Image 1: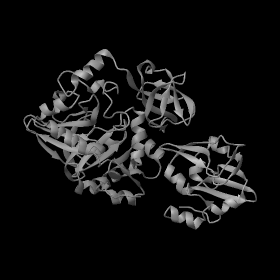
Image 2: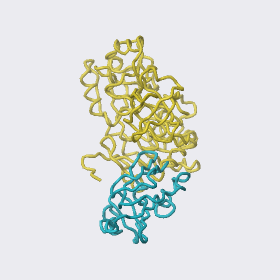
Image 3: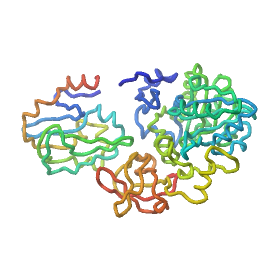
Length: 126
Length: 363
């Protein structure tokens, strides 16, 4: 199972890459494996300002559906439009082409509440 | 994962070694997926795959009055069975619903095998025992048998290498007791839950591993894959086959569920008068198939609404169909909305998304 050391994680199986004031967010390799074949990713919150733990979208797989939660508060500045036509990128490259949203963080200190790769690895039994 | 109290099937360790994701299902730890659900699904549809469905229950009924008991308990007419034939049927309860759906195998005039859903083994056993005033000898062999469903259009070509039983000449819903892969007395049954063709093979647990190995060697040239319960569910839904606990349950009549074809009023059975009156006087709701027009995937328990936004029913099964590339589902709707072509709406996350009633099977 792939858990890049340079990312932060949530217990809801999202990953966060923080660069300056921008957080790029997706779901982890473990999460995509649990969901199985992803059919589409629905994100209709672009431009919205959401709080930490709010739902920013949903991911529909063949066998199940799952909500996506904000790891941090902020404005959803961008979502990954290539997922509209290639949702399977979330399965094949969850930390790369499968990224979901970019957020302009409103409270950088929230990043301290996120898990390290090591802590996340323990959570999922890696 | 808390696996306490769960039963394991004979090939549990083998499935884990093949990379299966094992999940609790009907009290058993079962392989839900090996590598990729869609790949497993498509491989079965176009060629060949194997499901381990050893969780299914097997009851032997033996005695001079075995048929009388089966006729009283089941909705289909088991007197039409001859030796070597199988019948799909259901066990109506005494409230107008269904205890379980099942297969009835006739081995002889006085010996039958009932194959029931794993989730209902205890319930069915109690139900049948309660009504066995016919002196029929009952044996619950569920823990003794493994069941491999070898499914797909290439199943008979692959399995023919392993047996002298002429597989191509076997009719759908017939079975033979024969040698396969050097194993004696395999129940070779031309049945399945995928609509892709193929066979279900019943063997004693001790023979399961050698049968599995032989089947995979025989199927190698066809790209045989192990397939999990996930693919089994999408395959059966494309064919509109009912799943107990989803599409039929203790409160649904077989008539409402479109199972009139296995509900025969040529004999009396539990609540037969009630089901007959439903058939004659009409039902208020029907199980229908539907296809999504708007983007969304229907799931069990989602509401079904009409154009005015009023609730007219509920989704019982739904998925993205790997073969069709479309979202499909089944559900009960008020009878006025049950005709193919009717526009209905599925409530998905507070949105009412357009769908259309379709004839089942979907393909």
